[in-house]
Length: 151
Length: 289
Image (cartoon, rainbow over all chains, first blue to last red; front, side, top):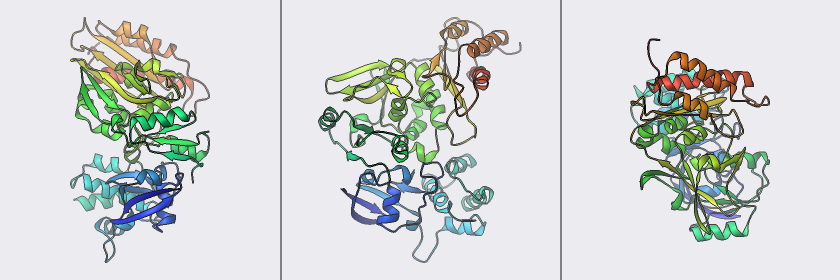
């Protein structure tokens, strides 16, 4: 077991974790932050995407111990105290959520995109979403939601 | 959960070599996008991971005594974002752009891609035509090895148990252009079916021009066809010449039929097309013939 210090959604934690625990497992099982999902567990689907020191990563392919002294933001960290944030509202307005399993990953990818630039090009948007799978295939609506949001 | 393993994150080179000297079974952890997959599928024997990300020696892209040094921990995203790489070592930029997805590029490293030595590794052919060298560090000092000698076989590189890939060195030429092209089953997150890098030194001076071509995912390690390179160097590249070049490239490879991604015939047909595409983009094809 190993002790790590980690900041998640602006809150500091000291946790004891086995080295073979993924960051995703740590978030879900140790901190009860179940917004981030495990889809494929192979880094292919994007459902587990979180911000790691500000950049989007696959939390299923990061070890909890690698996140020692790092800052992590999950979908739970994006919501305002009174509810949703603008990205989530844009998704709702465009019906960009079907089963919802992929949504936290998509929203985190969009947050990372908007952190990089407030005026993303179509190419930027496609690059940001490129590694995210929606099993309901609702890509058009997701793309539309982001286009409306950045217009 | 992953397969069980011990984890160490040394903070100095001395600590690193103490660990590698005492533990021949240890595996170096860089970005983890390959290694952690294997540990999840439990297909690897490693019981100890040594995370080198706390060591600064392996970071950064810098110009040094006439070459560009990319630390082994340089992420694919950093390569994609580097101005000097995009302008001078364009094939590497192309490879970074077609690599995985943004989230994977944020973690995956050039060192991991090279040491993993997959036959279709995205950076295999670009580094080969760019005449890259592997800078390897161990308790006894540093070794510098041409990249094509560093790759010994599929998944096998010239690293002793106590050595670590520290950096990739890229020679600098004033007049150098290069491109990398690959085919994949989907335009997005997929490994290459086949990939080709083309480089030209002194591209505007036809007599002096030197052309290099490397193919990936067609043999156990990236492969260069020197005969074709000689045919293309120092002459005008006409459509007629291109036809025989494509034939020779196709004849020179024998891709394995067990490939998951394409049949040998398809790869043989495509290497020429990718080469043509790169030559065209580099402005090396004669027009109107």
